[in-house]
Every structure is written in structure tokens, then in C-alpha cells.
Length: 559
Image (cartoon, rainbow, N blue to C red; front, side, top):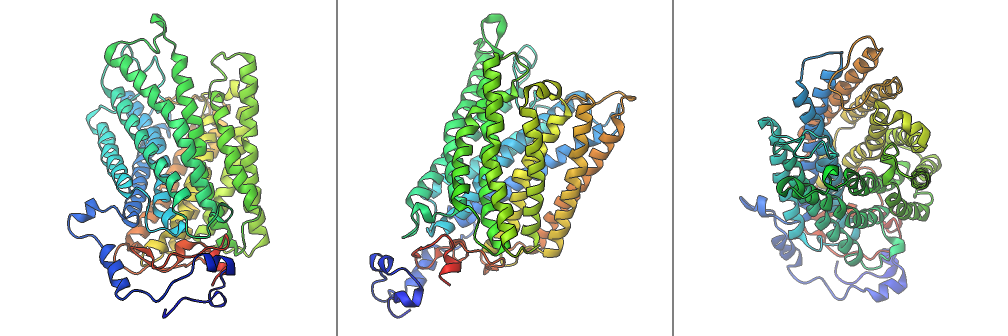
């Protein structure tokens, strides 16, 4: 460019052009200086690098590693439960694997994965060079990876926690868990949550303070809105579980009776503190995935998102209502009737903003020209699975039904439908959609369809029968069951489904090995025709010139 562009050449609004003009010619050697300052790491710099393009890829990769590891644990559990009275796993080993599966999925995969997606995408979406505190995000990643792997390795020494991923006292008190297994969980989870809070602060500052010129809040990408609400919820919810783990560790280490009813404590205090974090966490996981869905759906449907502001308001409503839902995990604990009624109403009300988002996605697909590529298939699969999980969630919000279904496999089925439909499938859609932004090759469409087909079929085979086994009375958290109760066939089908789902994930891993080529290769580019700033041609320094934004879809409106 030899001089500043005119508004007619760029399509920019004249008033914005006058506020943010390009003054003069580019400085001599400007591109070379950018490439020198934002150069690729060498030797040990691959470990010390703080550029979000690298840290974001590391972060997403680590989260997917824990997803695969937790999936292997799930296969071991389903092998044990495929037939009655199996001896594949001893009871103590099963309890450790069961606890580690839930803990790794919830604490080491779900929350870090969506936070990692924000670290990777937000600077590019906002037109910024990097995150506001890049060293903090790099530190958070390495602490998460090293701590998470050390925590996972406790399995190999028989020291893994065995009290369930919820760690209810008095089961986890020194009386019933005298070893150091529970201490691994308490200390590890506390530090993981502190890391998540640090990342949330960075996301809030990044979204509010590093936006491109012209990107006012009414032009903020919907994914950035989701990450903003997500980060705010983390800051409010996560101190609760940090307090709970600190109190329980003090009780175990020093004998202080916070949760010991025989000495004046109350085990119900743990449930209130844990679920005040634990149920908003479901929506903490869901909101960034919903933001990704609201970004991908317009791209695969080739039309703007229907009801953009209703979706943003739904994010805010979800963040608010979700903090009044935690006690619906406690309907069978003897809460007062007024409390039970209030939490039941809130549990049903929180489905309304989720419904707004689902109808927005359906309307966008219906009003556009849907492309059934890999991201599009995962979007449609997510819609179906999440709606099914939401319907059983409304059922569980009805107190008389919950009294019957509580602690049965019906709740296991509901939980997995919501989490897989509301987070896992959107995450895979995001991986297929945004891989061309950081890789020289997009992932294979053919293998992507196989991945989707196997994961979709395996998911229903694995968890649909669990509704039936739950209604037939099979309790959750058991390592085996007696024959003659008609639970054999549903459990065998569920186990087969788990392996079908795993086959889909294996094909995705093979696809990543074959095609994922980040760092130092030119990016594949905007394969799916997205309209956000993240698709601008970029090097490690992000975009060469900071863009001026005039709409929600700048690449569509300012070609």
C-alpha cells in the first residue's frame, strides 16, 4: 500500500475512517521488523514461548489429551459393566478409575478446553496482537499440564482418589478414606481452579480492553460475548470449590470438624459449597461451546445468525439463573419444601435461555443454505443430542420424579447427553472449523464424516439404554451387578456403544496426525467462509494492520 486507502476503496464508514485514518506510507522495513519481533521459537524457546498462537494450540492439545485419557478410563469401566459379576477390575480399582474419569473430564478437560479455545481465538477475533497478559496464560498452561499429568499418574501407584468426582464427606473423611488418595484430589483441584480464575481475568481484560477500532459492544463477536460471561461466572463460582477443598483438607490434616457431624460439623455444607460451583460449571462449560456454535452456524448456513441480540441476552440470563440452581442435586437430602420448590422452578427456568439459543440456531439453518460438511454435521448432531439431554433435565427438575430417578443410571444418561451434546460435539465442530486458521491443511472431510457418524451412533448406543436401566432401578457408582435383573442387555449395548464412540475419536486422532501442520507453515485459510476477523491473512504477529470494524461480520461486509 503506497498511501492511506479511501473510504470508497475499503467500504469503511466515513466517520470511522476520519477517526482512524492510516497516516502516510508504511515505514520502511515494517514487515521485516514485525517478523523479527514475532519470530518462531528456536530450541528451548518452544517451552518458554508466550505467543497465544503457540500457547493456544498447546492448551487445546493438552485438553484433548486428557479427553482421550479419560475416555480410556470410561472404556475400562464399560468393559467391567458389560456383563454381570465381571472381574475385569477390582472394586477399589474401579472406584479409583470411576473417580478419575469424572474428575479428568470435568476439571482437566471440559473447563480447560473451552478456556483454551478462548486463548487461541480471542486475540484474532478482536483484532489484537496477543492476550493482555501472555506470560500469565503460558504459566497457567504449563501448571495445568504438569499438574494434570502428575495427578493422572497417581492411578499407576494406587493413590488415585476413590470417593467420586464430587468427593462427598463423610466418605472422604479420614475415618473412611485414611490414605492420601483424597488429598491428591483436594490439593490438585484447588490449584487447577486458581489457574482457571487467572485465565478468566485475562479473558475479561482482553475482551473489554483489546478490541479493534470500531468494535463496540454491539459489534462484538458472539463468541467473545460467551467468553466474557463464562469468565465472569468462573470468578464468582470457583472460589466456592476452592473454599470447600481447603476446609476438607484442613479437616483431614489438622482434625478440624467442618464436615464431621459427630463433632458439630455438617456434611451438607460440602454439598452446598461444591454444587454452588458444580452446577454453574455445567453452564460455564456450555456457554463457550454455545458461542462457538453461534459462530459456526452462520458460516455453514451462509447467513447471519438469527436473533443475535436474543442469543447474547440468553448468555447473560444463563449466567444469572445458573447460580440459583445448585440445590437441585440435593432434592433427596431433606431440604425445606420452600427451598425445594424454589430450586425446582429455577432448574426449569434455566432451560428457557438455552431454548432461545437452540431456536436461533434452527432458524439460522432454516433461513440459509446449509452445507453438510464436518463442522455442519457436528452442529446438527449437537442440536439433537443437547435437546434430548435438556428434556430429561426438565424431567429431573420435577421433584417427585427426581426422588425416583436420583442416583440411578437415568441421571448418568442425562448428564452425558447434556455434556456431550452441549460441549463435546460443539468442540469437535470448532476443531474442524478453526483448524485451517492454524494449520497448513484442513482436516479431512471424509474422515470427519466417519468421525461424526461413529461418535453420533456410539453416543446414542452408549447412553440411550442408560435411561432404561436407571428407570429399572440400577444405581450409579456400582462396580458390578447381579444377574437376573434384566440389566444385562442394556449394559452390554451401552458398552458396545462406548467402543463405537471411541472408534470415532480414534479416527479423529489419526486425521490430526495426518493433516495438522501448525507453526511455520502457511495456514489453509478460510475454508468454510467465516465472517470474523480471525480469518484475516496473518503471521505470528496476527494481522499486519489493525483493522477498523464496522459490522458483526467484517469479512462478509468489507470484502
